[in-house]
Image 1: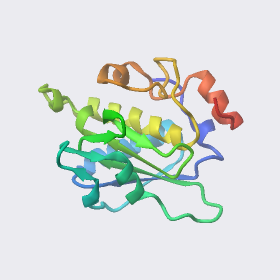
Image 2: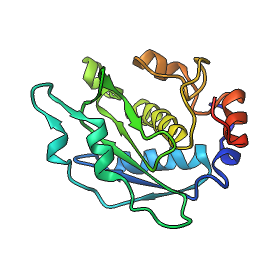
Image 3: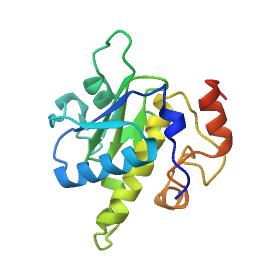
Length: 191
């Protein structure tokens, strides 16, 4: 994996709150928190589990709305605080216009969500591989944090900000940004 993003989160992100929404194994959540902490170099605090918002379940699709989960986990604004909340769910997510998403974030906003469901080998009828699940979840978590910090999708397939349309994309990309995305974030400019 690539070099760490400590310089990127420094001064931009004081702390990332990680919260399980619904049934997410606590040990998996802790491993994701550790991986994200290692990549971002900021404090990652695991919060108490929350229930899935009932309105986010769309039974006709058999999926949950990522945007409705985002609305439910947004942190209360605090003057001067640069806090972000990342929700982790083990439910299949969708977003407007897309069949599914691995995650979603408010661009430059306070909240994001990542789903473990399609990151797990079991979803595809393959044997479980927890280290690979955690690796994928960390990549998608860092991707969503990048959006919260103002980064958009990148064309570099090796950059963590590349849009994952499949597990092949997630497995191919690194857990860090390319140099172009690093410059944009450190300079505070949008693409």
